[in-house]
Image (cartoon, rainbow, N blue to C red; front, side):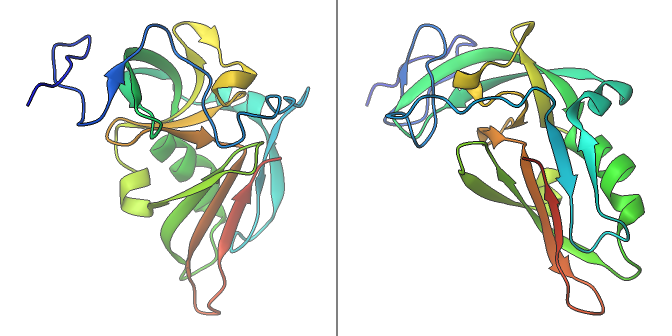
Amino acid sequence: MSHERGAAGGCLPPGQHLVDGFPRFGVQLARPAPRIPAHPVIKIRGAVTQQFDLPLAALATLPRRELTADFHCVAGWSATNLRWEGVGFETFYRTIIEPLLGLGTSITHVVFGGLDGYRSAMSIDDALAEEVLIAEHLEGRPLDADHVAPAATVHVEAGCRDSVLLVECGGLNRAEASCDVRSM
């Protein structure tokens, strides 16, 4: 069995083929890309002690880093060695969300969602891994509407998940409440 090689020389997953560039992706490709709000926010909701909207621009105050990862789309194509830049999700979580969790709250998972309404879930342990990034730049340029702008969650093992304009933290506290972290 023959496998195509990625740019780093590694094999692509079975059924994937290498593409030039980085095509538009998402679940609603027949529709125009969602409009990016002029001043996007991340809405923090749920089991936090105080709900609020965090301007996406506030991410610029957190430590930045770069991550190089391949993107393997479920449609069967792969783009390799993509250079993303942003804030580690663990830094975002520990700095912004965790201080606002109610006493005794135990978060078990997060749900990321985009402007197009797509949502995906990840365990909190996976989300807090070093290789998970809230990316705002790809290849040195701000993300565009075709690539889940204005920010995307990138996970080296899972690829780019979706826009970070919705983040829900789910779990149980003493009152069995969940934590929603949303951005619209």
